[in-house]
Length: 389
Image (cartoon, rainbow, N blue to C red):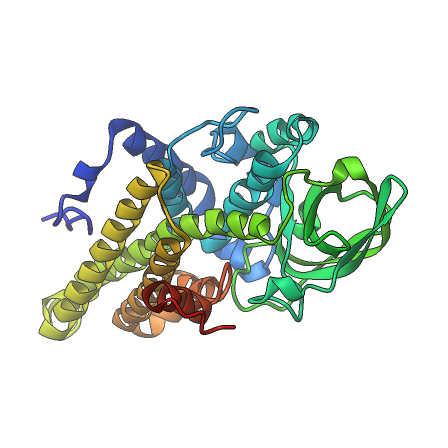
């Protein structure tokens, strides 16, 4: 008897349109054909062919897919979420490549850039011909970006930028960087080609998580850019925070993919692993683990789809996104850890995906807003009190 798909019990597919199912199917096939055969090696070596993957992802329309015009697919938010789910079922690092490209770098240019900036960069980024990165986080300022130390000083018609950014996905392979700075006029954003004199990117090595992802430090030394590089519609900290909200939304769906893959791996293993004259799936304790994981997984998926509908109605609030990330990331971690226990020692090898998902999710728990900050965002929405200030 075939094993049941984890979402079949609640008939979750009935919530999806045919277009949404088609987009999910195309993304799943790409992951099956391109990512799964290679991801264990990419993860183990800590190297991925990022530029090559970007072009492939651009060819199937996944880069900036939820944006309108400029070569972007213009899909709904739920379709974008489903694509993130399938990408992260392959690996969080692959989903991060797409998230940073579309929801941070491209979204910043699309929402806050000039028409010239949009025309110059968005078509190339949508095609995967140019990779973007998003420079907001600094070594000493993550949860509190308003304290950033990177500065932009006006000099005639130019700006002189000094400072550094840390934990920047895609940084070392990017052709363009969206950089956020302090200035005499407040927080400002700039669109900067990475071949600009004074710009350098150093790849972060020795990671134990998100190894199939390019992580970098960006350094700016008397980097001169024209005023035309400034994002004209970005006039406060609200601009980068809105970009982060876009990326966090994709994570809500993405981690469901990591959890689903962990669950399916454990279910298949339990059905074929023989112990005490039968498959371990027949034992009550194993079935209880599977039942608990399946329930959590379906609950997370329903929450993601619900938030997708709200976002497609253009009514989503930051606290709702925080609740989605807060619940779904921690739930995905719980599922991965439980699933690993079913595999025993086999679960710690690269032969199976679960431990890789576990390691990746530890990073996802703290990037794009730490678990604690999202808890306090929810708390503020409930009480009206900003406890983190």
